[in-house]
Length: 68
Image (cartoon, rainbow, N blue to C red; front, side, top):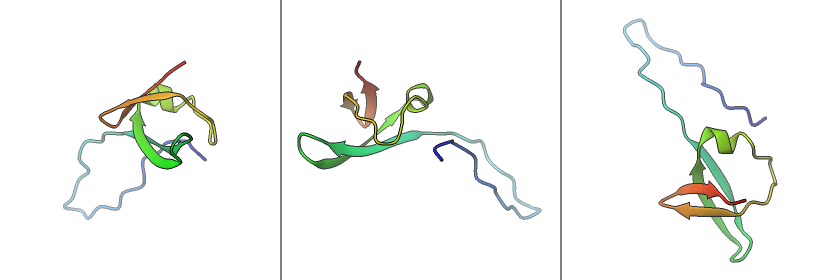
């Protein structure tokens, strides 16, 4: 299942949850070098991906951009 979700938090009565933020990380293999790579995508791009899908991406400072 690749649906994003917020995990359940168990707090004491004197605790509260802070603000939330999200990141969407992709891990894969560079087919030219056979090295593992990882990078971040926007939710909009991440939500279109399928497990095992081949991508052409441009990666700058760990931020990915899917190339058409």
